[in-house]
Image (cartoon, rainbow, N blue to C red; front, side, top):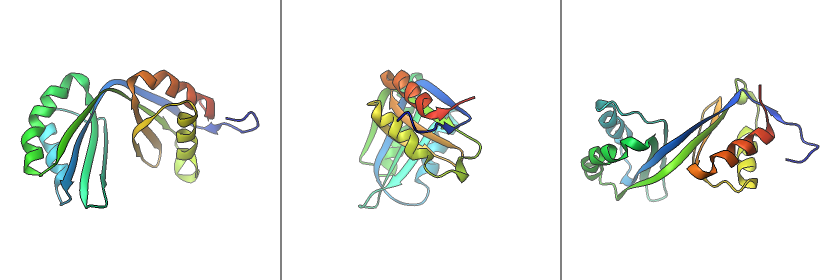
Length: 161
């Protein structure tokens, strides 16, 4: 951030380390894909801390989510038959990863928040593995080893309480 730029007001930064990013990748898009995945996990009392879903140009659905690393093997066992049923091409994992989120009560009314966060991470050399946003939060999955640099980068551009 340039010295002449003013920091953007935010409510805080949250971080969760030691996660596993799981992907159910390249399933033909159809209604109920995410419901099937997450009702399976929920039935075993497994919680996803981050969820993102997208559809590519081939009309294939890609669902990625973070879980606790210690639950990874159990989740993969549960997802094997689900992925086959959904005709997913692959189930992927990336461990360990971390989730970093910046939040603020009025982000909805302030354009450019995501760009500020992504720019700070990029300038710090932190690669973003997945993104999810809401009206009040910008969340990024990063390599677990990059979490300190990510926190420092966001602290540099956001005015925190």
